[in-house]
Amino acid sequence: MTDNRFMITRRLFLGGGAAGAAVALGGCNFQGGSDSAADDAAGGDGSGPTGTVRMSMGSIESLDPHYVNNAMLVVPAGLLEGLTFSNDEGTEAIPAAAESWEVSDDGLTYTFAMRQGATWSNGDPVTAPDAEWCFQRLLTPTGAGSNYAAGASSYLNGLNIKGASEFLGAETDDWSTVGITAPDDSTLQIELASPNSDFLLLLSHYSMVLVHPPSLEDGGQEWMQPENWVGNGAYVPEFWEPTTSLQMVANDAYWDYENVGVQTIELVIGMDETARAASFDAGEIDITGASATTVAEREDLQELVAQVDGYSVRYLQRMWGGHEASSDVRVRQALSMAIDREAIAAIKSTDEAGTSLVPGNVVPGWDESIAREYDVDGARALMADAGLDQVPSLRIQYNFEDPWLSVLADQWQEAFDTDVTIDILESGVHSDTRWQPYEDDSVISLYGGTFSGLPTMTNWVNNIFPPSYVMQFSMSTADWLEYQEIQAEEGLSDLDRAVALDEKLRSSADPKAVEFADQAAEAMGILDDAERTAAYLAAAQTREDISYTIPISWSGRMMLVAENVSGFHLRPSPEYAYYKYLTVDEA
Image (cartoon, rainbow, N blue to C red; front, side, top):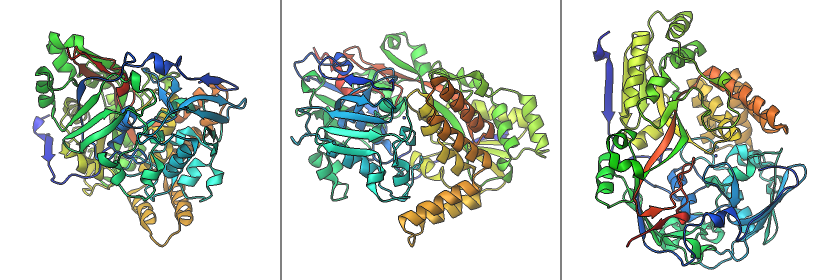
């Protein structure tokens, strides 16, 4: 086999595009306040914030948490708060905008007491009606739906709030059918469609943070500008240029201001790996992403590492269009079986072989029964069963050069004796084209990506690679284009569009993808923990078997933190850490 068939192309486009892109039940009562876990973790010493911390960050093109965008990286970290935080391990909810809550005996109704004395940065009180207004905005249909496309609603269907998915899908415009009410300024009630043991933890997701209703009521975007910002988080933006810098200062109206440790947070945007490393060495930035290879080679960095395992799942997604063979489940399964995930994981010390779309190294209840096996002979046999004497050329689309790509390309090239092209696109173009059919019908095309989220089975089955996503990507190219036409049809009412989209999705999706959707929905409503886990595993097995999405690795997150910075608790969620807990010694 010659190496000249392994090709890498790089295409850089000017202008860019949309930003690329989850407690016990039954009569329990969680009391917050000064003795809560949130206060125990507070970064400051009670004297108020001091000093500056600088972090590297990717582009931040929006600060609106109600839509899929890179707001997820920074907004919940310090600019806005929801009803709950999560703890450092991402396993337990702790009080935030709500200081306590009670859960009904049947596990369906959560009654939140809003934090007394909490205000927005302009002095307005943070009230339960504010929270209800925010959630209604989050769930108001936009036509973009609820999926992973930039601009779609960021609501997590796995929260399982009564009537929420139906309202978002425009099946009704009657807000009273949604289980969210504010009986008074201090009390918010949320009713679930069925009990959800992960509900309080999932409330810490960025989509569920609160925004200031009067600032947004005109429907414009100016509220995100620093001079107009009104927030309830530990910080407020002072300067924001999406491709260069986001600077935040401590919010002196914040309810826990005296325990905020750092006065100024500056996010330095747009540096590549070489520039980040040089800036960290020079003391120009204090926190940055780290290459496992660089850390392994430099002893002086090894004491400065913060790491969290199972932070994300790296995956490949079968794209619409391309060679018709990708519609055959045997071909997709063969591609998955021919991946030596152990070899790919060995490239980075933070990675493990990603044998499933549920990261089994961190999610309780995971079982090896859903793990994908490495079997090159079996993969070749599947290709032969599919009638492929010659496997079509393969294409992998990604948004930056990464060593795992060439390792995978070599594996597929050796297994199937075919051309493998790695196509590196500018990030905005990569994000946009993921949802478009690939035009060259001689090539099987896949794109690569990563998703991260809280380590629960509900989150990784119902919210990450969720039913709607799986069904959409299982549609034929023609059906997907028809589906998009329905979304764009201006003559349809919201209700008619929702009905038409649902009918099109369920009638055109792979029946096994529909089966996965039904299994996931059924599992969410099971009360017994063991039975619910078993049901989720069955759903996950179905999703793995159809192989529209192929797991590659379970990737840890490694960052470097300067010696004079404390309180950086790296978490298994997109926002990395809560800024309020940081402290800096500038002596």
